[in-house]
Image 1 (cartoon, rainbow, N blue to C red):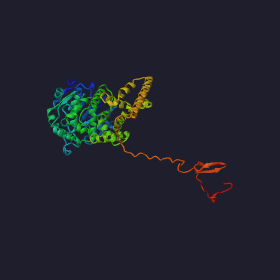
Image 2: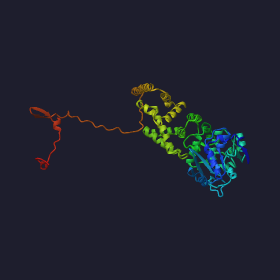
Image 3: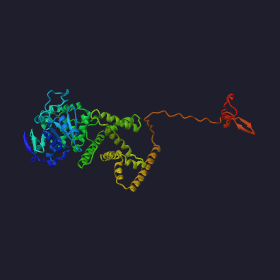
Image 4: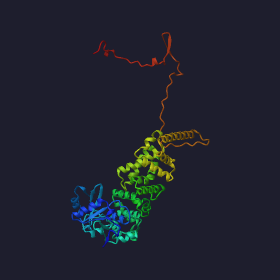
Length: 483
């Protein structure tokens, strides 16, 4: 172990938010050791802006609860942690962990229980990557380095602590973390990791909960280097473990969406991780729609059922939450509405809750070379920048063009080809409805008979003679005033 001066590592308390300092000071005041550890220290040393900070201490979760009271909440069963709230910030506080006295593992070697408290030396050995095993004490101004992690940071090398095979078996999610850190930090992966990072090893991810895999996939989508990590998912055979019916290839549409997502994160815009799932599952959704349409299902019902099928299939790998599934299906449904909107509904459609997401999706399709958008992506893009009068003129022009296209299509349908006509088989074979034939009022084969009344003759087929006479029983008729 070596003790480094924080100032030589480029660290100072001025870089830290008040929330993490508040947690460290409260634990120290209560008589416990406390350090900042993990990605926060690593990113500060690399000159990056950390998303959050984690703390580690020799206090047990129950003791942390006593220090912070109602500000603390203990979570986790396999890996018990304390969540401490400091204002609006959430700080994750872990306890020093020791090797398990009695290993509670699955058949593949994955750790199922990991709540054995220990010392800081034991805790360092339990960490996954060397660059995440540096302990920073801001008040003392020191950094504890147990494994020469400072050299790995300078050499930009991603190295696992201990035997890579054993570390992946303990927690297969570390394979995803390996690719995520390599893409985010632009680090090279150590040779000993590459030797055991095989398709057979990635099969261990099947033992991970689909809920946890969904959380890890969101970290991949939102780290700001999605376009860099996607090819790595294919090269290391992780793609097949995360996505059910998506072919392991990066289409132009997926690439454009990944680049757009990274750009939005870099300029500080918010993103919805479910949007990229909508992009990834778009092609399987279209294929499923074609399947139902070929069976004669109505288009609206085909889209609805196809969306359910694709998302249900994906749930075998990563379970997408219900609200995210609803978002994805609404984005897909908006494509039909944006491609052929009714003129009187354009204004209301532009203020729809899912308009922006649906429009972004449509524009990305168009920029990726999808000809089925018919230029409507650029039309909606221009429409949003228009004034009220310009929008009315644009809608009128769109209405005229729409009517012209309909007339042209109707004309083409009515023109009979000169060549031999080919009968088109209908998608659904339905029997034609039977039409009741009207009976002629006059029968030509029978002479019309007449009845004389008041000097004039009335034919038998006259309406007045066709009235049905209802016989009444006069025994039940009451004559005179009634009550």
